[in-house]
Image (cartoon, rainbow, N blue to C red; front, side, top):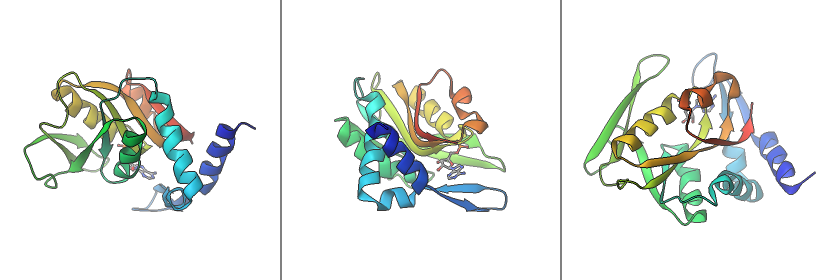
Length: 178
Ligand code: AMP
């Protein structure tokens, strides 16, 4: 077994399934055991960053909240800056806003207007890709800023929800797939 295969297997084993959280019918993928283990945390960051190592990445956009945890470390690994994409009303300066549909209702994400320069190469980071609604909204924000999306990097991909197809042609890299 290669070191990478062993690391992916160890990360997969550590991810904890929590049924009916935050609401009935949802099987929540709890990544906190990965964060808790120094070896797994380092592997997760390396494996999420490596697919984009040879690309030009100017800024990493982390999606609130678990995208912050990996995003900042990946930015440091790739020698890029970090930009938080936050829920409505949390960012202190001028913002661009995007709303997107949830299963029930709507959610809103914001970015500082000066966070992505025109033509900047952007990597979007989150802990998990499900339907792709959240990442799709962030793609729109980057487009509005006239940035160039190099890709999306996530630790976990729920393949059966086909988020990757929804985000096409955006490049998607994931470490563990279900
Ligand atoms: P989506 O917009 O459907 O791709 O959902 C992705 C966002 O919702 C990410 O920020 C995830 O952290 C969160 N999320 C969605 N489904 C799950 C799940 N089953 N377990 C953990 N987080 C989830």
